[in-house]
Length: 554
Image (cartoon, rainbow, N blue to C red):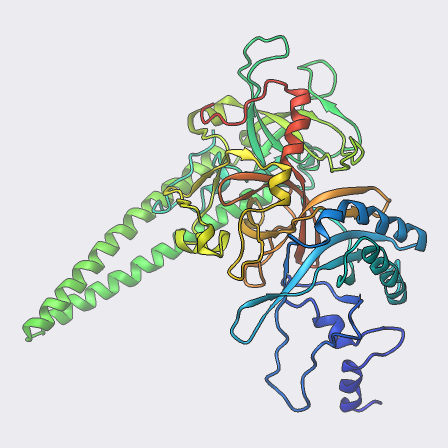
């Protein structure tokens, strides 16, 4: 049996058939997610050795990496030329790629300042299909392609992973309302938890992307219809054929869309009970503290001490009164939700109207067409409809959120955080703006921070990649995608299963993409994919030529 010292030595050394050590394989991507992928090969392995802990150093730490977009480099103007050539090389050499993504990894220096590394290609292959030697040999040819087109100094990073789909309402409350967090799944803001009726047994769920009004029918007559948009795979099971609802008794059967499936609704009830129980416990503790203070107050002789005790007693009584009031509000809310929403049929918010099959060959863009529309029930939305607004929640205070979206203070452009935390989505970002972001980070490097609100992970921030990624399914379907990386390790995953259909947006309310998939590993994900919103809207206008996207009333 090998001694522990021999085992540890081999952990830091390259052991055939691997081309890198187990230590580097496991730790190289540390920080890009809570459960990062493992490195298979990188092209700068020989010239840029991965640091290992010195013998006896018990305090050695592997620096966390963050994945960043690629902007204003030699790669940007030729990306759409070289990426297809690289993919052709993959096919020629039998490389079963799942994703080809432009990236720049950053790590903190001794002062904690993030330093960008070289331009890289983050290449994922389907698990078990290729070897480290395949990756090493292909890397040499990839770099030759890039250098032929004037792009030098690029590093290839290889790993294994597959792409996976991530699958009357109330008015949103002010953050001071005790029901602020627990009522959110049943409000009309974007990110609502959707559950298709036909997937009831699977208890599938996804997110609402955005709303639009039909405006008028194709014959010019005014239309009262209002629609929600999400992913096709969120709204129905069979996404291989087109679906159109033509009315009762004609054509395809009606497919209802609900808010909150069984598990989501049960979680909502459990969360409400937990919050209520917490407030009751705090009220009991406060009442005990008040009784103790009143007893102590009788024996205080010092005038200043008596005044201080009286002020403390008054504050605690005010806190107790507020807690009792909030508890009563929460209890009423819990009863209302239980009575009015427990019947799953009461959670029907509309029905699917149009859902074309998922396709990546609609036009020469090769974006993923994975969207569908559902007509809203007026009775569920009319009273509290606000249009396309996102609830930014209470995860970040206004100033911190500003610093997250615009890390360089010079880029904030007078942005005013909405007092009610409801960010209006005002436009779809143009392709030109996506290629040339108008802000930089604290180091002066181009940066584009985006957000999303999904039914699974809530409000999160991420880093837009700048260049489109190329992905390939296990059956060979290839597409181009908007790519978003996790913001950093501390912020967690940008998305996960249940967030499909969510809208990705920037800090000024510009719509970037409709989220449809990602690259999950165990319980975490390090990359998110979406279809450009401007293209989704182009496709919707073919079906609804008079659609209006900015109304704020039903």
